[in-house]
Length: 265
Ligand code: MN
Ligand code: MN
Image (cartoon, rainbow, N blue to C red; front, side):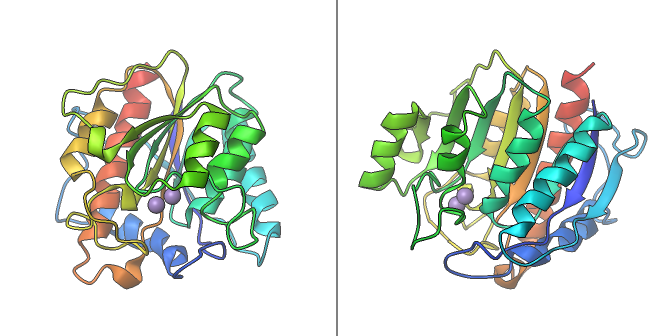
């Protein structure tokens, strides 16, 4: 499948700080910046393969945006594209997965995050960015959910992990040689705060003790099953005072796009 980029300027379900809605143009700018080139580390020239840019979803206020995201992702998937969503808070992953799962009866999620995002509700909101993976697992949209980089597990969320059979690789247990195996297509949901704030300070929830950019890239590069789609979420430009986090997002975009291409050949 061919990768397609789609921006999602929506951060209304953020519990602590707004700003993730402003991410899409900055990730695009870093991706196209003359500071680097279009080659992935895996040897794909992303200049020569056409990456369709579907533009940004026009944001609507409130929960109506959820249905709109679902619809726009379905449209891309039906047209034969593999969507890579840029920007937004993590709440958008639930409607994205509805759209993706409509085409993929068997699916696993590889989820990078400091947080499990498994709350049944957060401050009374079931669509909060703290809840998307509870909604996804309740709806039975995927066979497996594998979380990497977690370092904020709460008691309630540990119960949710048991309830849904989530495979959690907590940051404290991460080993360099860890090799994740998938036997279904995999969807990559990348919350930028899964990385250590030393590498990616431009996030709303800076949680020390996270993955290095290199560790995350190595995990992605070892995927050997088709990639059904991806999102790069929770990048908050208001917190990105040096602009480095935009380039981290662009680097992830590059390697994920290349992975989509190489695993679908
Ligand atoms: Mn998250
Ligand atoms: Mn997070």
